[in-house]
Length: 246
Ligand SMILES: C[S@@+](CC[C@H](N)C(=O)[O-])C[C@H]1O[C@@H](n2cnc3c(N)ncnc32)[C@H](O)[C@@H]1O
Image (cartoon, rainbow, N blue to C red; front, side, top):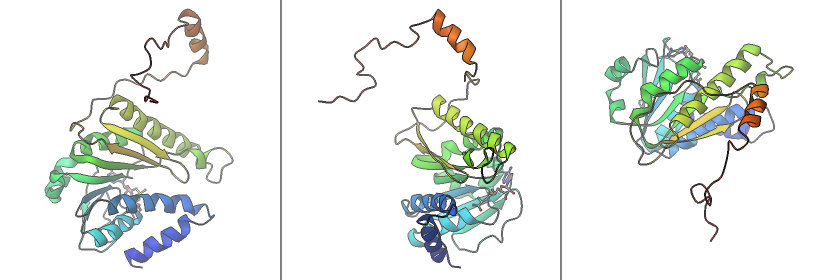
């Protein structure tokens, strides 16, 4: 099937009532974002059978962009295209990957993170590649939604439920530690898609993550509220966070 036919198939599925529409919608997101970057450069972390590769290469064939795909296994036969480079490596081994695809050093427009689904690995991937992401560029993250894996859901799977929730929290933690340089949104359904967009004019690098400060204990929260009833106080006129109405 040609890349263009694959996109037609995805669009058909994305508009259907089938559960597969969520997966198709996520791949269409990749395709539509890639279409916005004529002559751009895209990086895929985790290639496997090349679903994401096909979606992005469909855009590359239209707009002259190129895709570099990474996998720890040999996935060099996943797709065939002049606009495609495959590198067999761990997705965090930036030093080696850029020797094989030096164009990446000139800046990346889109990174699709879909390799080893642990929060630790995803964090390493973000810190390995974010500084090469161009301002306005996007990082997509597969596997951030636990919903399909909840008890009694179709894919009921405790390991995946917990893993995806931990990855989503990790991405949120990275966002809150670097809120001035990125925007974050999440698309739910299927395995979910996290979307970080590097803000225009943003600095190059990322701040390191502080230790997690999430609170879980509602009993301690109630005690804290008793002891410090005015923890949140809006002391000003709100002009620092509200948009003026007139
Ligand atoms: C979910 S699949 C990728 C699916 C692919 N993006 C697609 O759209 O069809 C995950 C892939 O990540 C690869 N992988 C696992 N650990 C990796 C690592 N440390 N570095 C690079 N790839 C890795 C696996 O070999 C597997 O092919």
